[in-house]
Image (cartoon, rainbow, N blue to C red):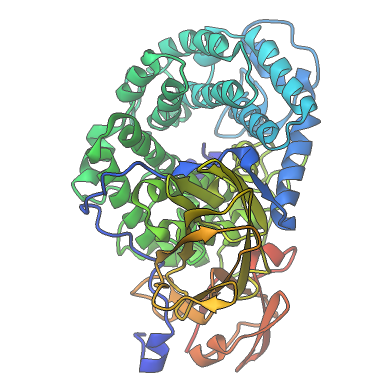
Length: 608
């Protein structure tokens, strides 16, 4: 979903400096490469992983508390109003309201009535899967039944975003079925589908095309091309074959996936979040139908996206994807503060990288996920029950963290889902063992060959180089432990029970340790976090961001334009969870994104 206003249409001189420059994120291996004929890695369940990271858990608690305390009459109000029913209670506010006289040229409240309801149901269902909170489950069941009383074609006829809203309601209901065992979820879904389909296009329609005659321009901004992912999931979870058939109908092949599969870069001018989100639909087409074309399209698209991404891993300034070699991403550092649609963009990014990692076992998709996590959404400002929500990460030379000026925008729907999904992004497994993807204090449990196994990790990464993991098993068992070695981690090392394992660790891969594991076995992983510079693009090599491991280090404004050399930037010294440099213009403090509060900062500096 997009914001109303967004709808408007020195080369390196020394070898040492060149060696310290990071490439433009990373480029996935060629999309034409064949994928081994092996089953995709399996996700763990939400309840299989316990996270003890304070930052991650604070985000989960915050979003869950907000959702649990929203008025149920307010949540149902737009549905009841649009169905012509009595609608008690106060308006929730912002985008969530229904306003029959809404004018997108001048109004804010009423832009997307009820649009986030399904996402909030999904987030609550996932939270129940994590905590087994009876109160949360009861809330989901109660809201589903109240919603079922409002189902009406009028909701879709009067809505700018019938396909978008249906997609979110679909997800909320299939998550209710999957995670809280709502016995009525599929029946409610059937009624929802019957009401929605007559008011959706017959196939995927790109945003630039009109499909509802007599409606104003804002009615073009629906996102039918993102629907197949959740339709395929509904089919996989037992909702019926018709959901697979509808999913196939909404695959955006002719203008999007077909050219991407041929290697044609058609990203320019596309709405950033929704088209990246649609890549999860192409991955589900591969996973459900075995379509190699859609896998190829996704890999190609992600490589193209990587080439125009910021050092943080974010993308889409002013919510638009850009032409290759256009200089638009560099220009955005001065022209806009709307650099990356953070909760929505990270949600889309995590999904597509999770799919690609599971299918390809390419660890660098995990690197990309890690970078986006630490440098964007984990540093988002908390949600508030009055509708305040964090929307854009700001990579302007004079950047700040601020709340959206729109109440309950789309990013208030995705942030609670992101907060729950850290668990399913952290670990994967197959018949041979476990893959550790994200390094954060956490514990995962699974059964291997009849034994109950627990793997716990601890440490202060990414603020330190060291990560410790420990095994607990009900019986000694042989399995493979696969550890993601980031592509930047030159000199990484692994010890098992104090003994080094030579010739094993290669950056940009999963390092595999196969042995009989028993309780008390300890694994120590060293990931040297050397400083490196990453230019905004190859044509503007003097505009660089500083990275330490997966972290972008953001210079905090000093009141004067900084004058800094490459060598001074690379000489940053760490003190706890902040860094400092001595620049030509004076000392500069640098913070990771998660530590920035009200300070003005830059993401990039122009260096000499």
